[in-house]
Length: 371
Image 1 (cartoon, rainbow, N blue to C red):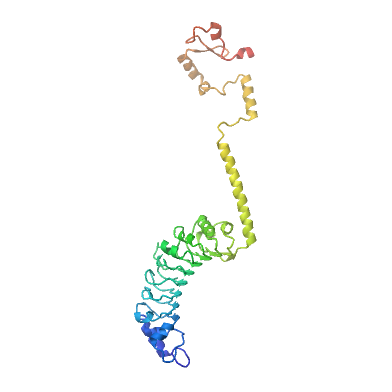
Image 2: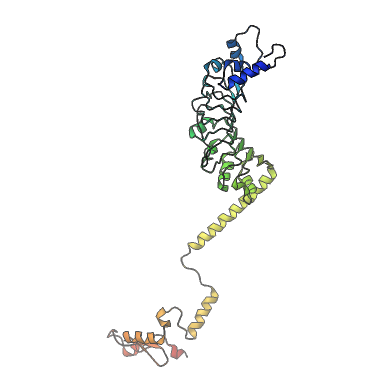
């Protein structure tokens, strides 16, 4: 660095570029901070005061040089994006780190490689992480950016339950867009009850019930983006989501959610649900009725048929059979005989001896007399 202009010289930039291909070095760190160096200050003393270190776009692949980060006791913000970093191993001793920008590297995990106790912002978008773990102690984390992970076909991004438990009381912003997440993968997000901004665009959310679970569980949500999901193309998607959301939701898929519109939709939804409950109760009451009541018209029709001699209703199916079958039934049952008028009489066969002959010869129905 030029001591007069404070800018990087071509020579120092060339050395930094050469060193970055081998990994981080102390020389690279000394050239990557804007902290003003005191006169005659040693490298160790200088690095111990550095709070921001800009190592982005340096072609770095390794961070495990103890001569660099062991000396950065006061480091709070580290820029590592647009490199080739495969592991964050070497950052364990950065106990004061608050913001880490490690987008667009080749990370597959951060577990066991990062002190998270003071971490407030974590940017990991554009890596190759399929299961995010290692945030069990990140109870100060407010922002988590994990969008567009470069995963193999069939893989989708998830956050393990231990990490969910570690960040649920502090996280207010989550960007997990473009990760192929479906209903199973977003279940853990429902526990992040303090979320105010949630970006799940370009995922695999297909069912309206999943959207309802999100907006009804995350009551502090202000901004929700689900663009590019299958569910966002369904009919009445916007209205149904707004109906079930909390009172704080201000934007959905980049569109404003007005309080009056939300209140109107919620009143309409309550009315529809009330009518549906009433209809269900009526249906249940009808299904519990054992004997349906005949209509008055049907009763009059049955009475008229009885007076006209039509006895077909209320009798067994055998009386509607053809004459040949009726004849065979009479032959098999000698207790029945028929007069010329077609009225059946009970014969004396099998009757009690105490019954008179006149009673036995009485027709079952006094049809002839009524005529």
